[in-house]
Amino acid sequence: MVAGAGAALAVLYRYRSRLMSTTATALKTRLVVKTADGIGLPCESEGPELAPLRVVAAHGLGSKDPSLKSHADDALRTVLLPALESVQCRAAFYTARGHGASDGWQGKGSQQMTWPHLAEDALAIADAHGPLPKFVAAGNSMGAATMLNLALKHPDRVAALILYRVPTIWEARTARRAELLGSAARLREERGASWPFYETLAGSAESNLPPRNDPCWDALRRRQMPILILAHGEDAVHPIASGAELAEMLGEKATLQVAANEAEASVAFPPLVSAWLKAIDDDVENW
Image 1 (spheres, rainbow, N blue to C red):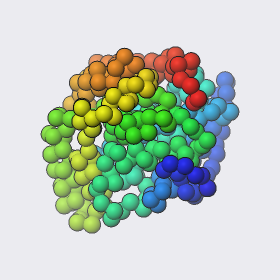
Image 2: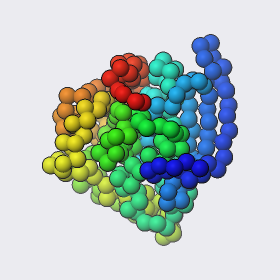
Image 3: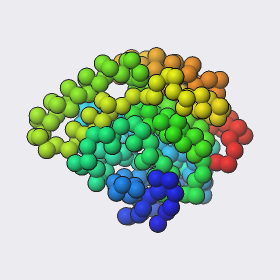
Image 4: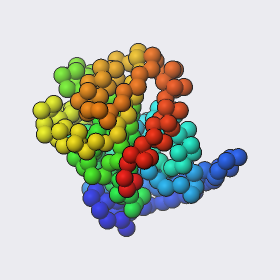
C-alpha cells in the first residue's frame, strides 16, 4: 500500500516482460492502480530495466468512443518511447478514468472527468511508482491539459512539463464544448441512455484552463519549470495557437516547437524530446 497525496491504494496485478536489444534490457511492467476515490486505472511502465522512472504520461481524449481509447494507442507513446533509452529513464503510461478498461467511475457524474480532477489521478499514478517526489509530467491533448492542471495545483511535484497537441483553451473552448456535447448525445442515443461513457465526453466539454488572471499562473512562472510544448499544423482540434498562447503565458522557460503536420511531427519530435530531456538533466533538482 502506498501513502501520499492522491495515493494509490492497491496494486491489483502485475507482470513483467523483458525485450532484449543490443544496448539494454527493456522492462515493461503492468499494474492497475486504485485512486483514493476507488477508480482502477490500468498502467504500464516502460524503459530500460535498471533506469529510474522519471516520466508520467497521460493520453488524449477518446472523443469518437472513450470505451475504445487507452494509453496503448496514443500518439504520445510514439514521441516518448524512443527517448527513454537515450536518456536512461522509464515512463508510466496509464489509461485515464472514463476510458478503456478503467473502472469504478461509472455513475459518478461528469465532474470527475474535468481536467483538474484528472490531474489528481496523474498524481496517484506517480505515487504508485514512488518514492517519486518530482517527475516529468507529459500529456497529449486532454492529457496535456491534465498535466498542466497538475503543475498549477501541485507545482512542487512536477519537475518539468511536456505538452503535446494542446487542445482548444479559453475562448476557443466554447465551440469545442458544443462539438463534444453533440458527439456525446449522438453516442448515447446509439448506445442507450445508460451508456456510461457519456460522462467522459461531458466532463471534457465542461473543462477549461483557469482564467489568464488567476494567481496560479504567476505562481507557476515563478517556479521556473522547464516546459516543452509540441504542436503541428493541419489539426483544428489542437490548434497551434493554443500552444503559442501557452508558451507566451508560461514565460521564458517554455519552449514551443511546431511541425507542419502529423507525419512531420512523428519524425521530428522524438529526437527533439530526447535532446530536451538530456538538456534539462542539470536544470532540474531532485527528480
